[in-house]
Image 1 (cartoon, rainbow, N blue to C red):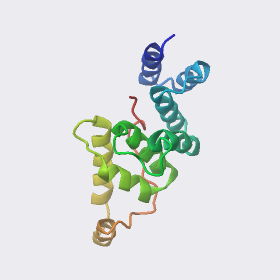
Image 2: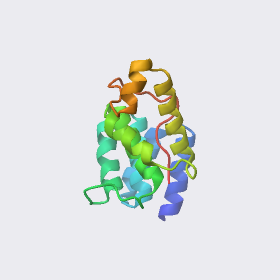
Image 3: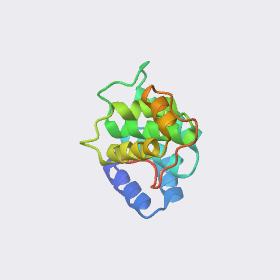
Image 4: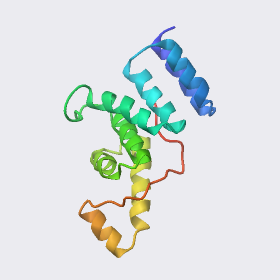
Length: 150
């Protein structure tokens, strides 16, 4: 079975909220393409295994380099930032999200809107601290399923 067919099956399973089944399919494929690793990170986030998701998505985002290359797909960077948010690492997550272009990727736009809502909910002092990149330490929650597929 080729990667495209597997990706389609994974997408269908996730669309039907069958995250565990999607994860089992990923495990059986033993493929390490960007699409499959990204899907694995998305599944891990949706299963609440955020530390494992951070590990998988960090290696995918950084691609063996000391910094995230700007040419890495925005959805990969956004998924890594989401895993960081869900793990409570707001500083690094928000920094990544702020640099992403949301015009081409609906998931990035949704993340940016989430951050705008969080900022809007802060008091005057909190918004001042946000402006100087002292983001709240409180866990930021999403009102939608975390992650997007390539």
